[in-house]
Amino acid sequence: MDFTFNEEQKQFADALRRWVDKDYGFATRHQIIHSPAGVSDAAWATLTELGMTALPVAQAQGGFDGTAVDLLLVMQELGRGLVVEPYLATVLGARFLSLAGGHEAALERVAGGELKLACALGEQQSRHDLHDIKTTATASGAGYVLDGAKTVVIHGGQAGALIVSARSAGAQRDSGGISLFLLPVNTPGVTVRDYRTIDGQRAANVTLKQVALPAGALLGAAGAGWGILDAAADYGATLLCAEAVGAMDAIFAATLEYLKTRTQFGAPIGKFQALQHRMADMFIHLEQARSMAMLAAVKVDSTDDEERRRVVSAAKVRVGQAATFVGQQAVQLHGGMGVTDELPAAHHFKRLSMIALTLGDVDHHLERFIAQPGFAQHA
Image 1: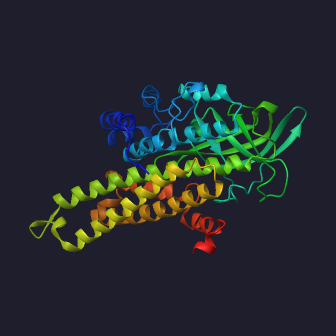
Image 2: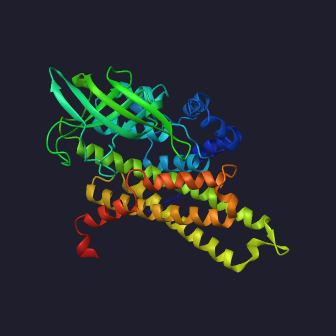
Image 3: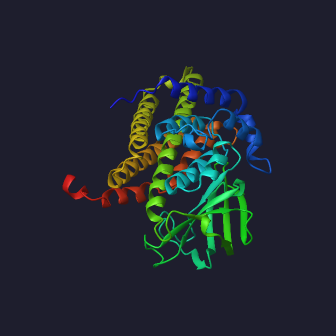
């Protein structure tokens, strides 16, 4: 299998990196995350101009038919630059719409940068089990009425519409009976409480009280949303792995530069063999994570659901382990200032910590990997 990126992919990534370096530096990001909105309209407009919002959308809806491998490069650059715009949330929402079909108008608006999306999937009791759903969808006339609450909806406060999972049949933890909906945030009965997370991103808690939706808001078939939800969540986990690799690239480079310039006992501390060994260990973790993130990007579109789950979970485990190790080592090698807000490395470490916990942590995905059919025979 050829893992060489083509010229078009490289140009896409280079254009994004140049913009980040020129117009989205650390000081600019600091101003954005401490602004009332927590995101930048100007930055979003630039992402749209660069074609980033159109990349994951089909050509029929004004997009570029980008693959997960194309998105891999984009997410690496966003991770390297600590970009806090609602790109991942919107791309993941677009994935739901693409898998479900029938919402071409919304996808056209996503491609044009007019519509930002967020995915309201988690609940207070569910942790990483996205099939654990208390929110209800009750048939009413020609439509549905939603009631419930969703927590830690990444960029829920910045979205124009939400992808909402709700239970229309079955018990609380059944994979059957789950329905998915496209919900405009200005629908009566929707309350969004926006807040900033420890990594500088935005999230929201969403309350749904007697929210009436037409039948056209349904994604896919009623009660059969688990297949879409499971596949889309794996797609999101794959993109998170790519973002983590970009963040680890940045924090590794910053640590290496620090070891070359920080002197102790009359010599750069990078000359000390013990620290060289630790940098070598960080590099090994980073490269293993990079390989697994790339494999997940290649396999996430597989028609074999078992293979997709197995590879994505393996990647999320390895990337999560690497993120923790690389981040902790970087902080320690920087000394006390490694945890200060003035140092970009501290912000990369916070983002890596959040990525490791989003859409399933290491323990969750390790358990899921082991549960896949055939594991015992190959172990």
